[in-house]
Image (cartoon, rainbow, N blue to C red; front, side):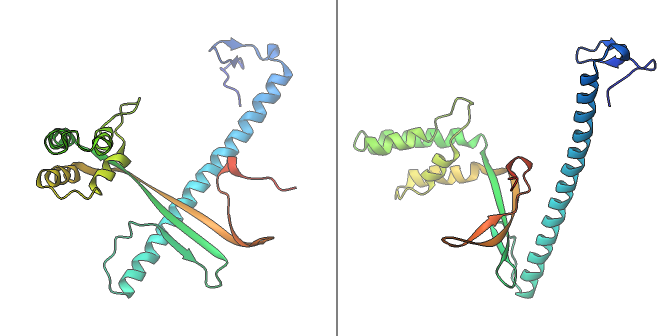
Length: 209
């Protein structure tokens, strides 16, 4: 419903009051349409959020029960896939963690630059380029996390390099963690069996005719 004052005047987008008799009927119809659908959308959004929280809690409870049954301590940080007994229904839980680095990263860069200058000395320009690019920032001033992690996997047997990688590991921490849950249904297609996502994303829903 439109915002009105005590006299029934309508408040427009510029903050001005307009007497109701001067508000076009189509504007009133549009306002009622937007208000009604918006309220329904909010309710559905709240229902989806409540269902997501319920799903997370139920999955966590099952995984905890599984760990206790098998007598194994498990924090279940990885991705999980759960299937129904007949294999036609599937729930996938994925964890997306965002890594960040503290002030120790500057020490890593200093140590690595020193290593490149002392050890490579222009003998391996390709490796030197890869290493230097790992510390470059993008236009938003963010470090390329994937490139830095690649440095940890370089097979370099050198004391100074290993020292730098130890500092790099110490500088890393999980800054945020997001949990995604997908529900899937096994379907038969012309090419065989396939998994179809049960869409809970409003804008990804396909209206089938």
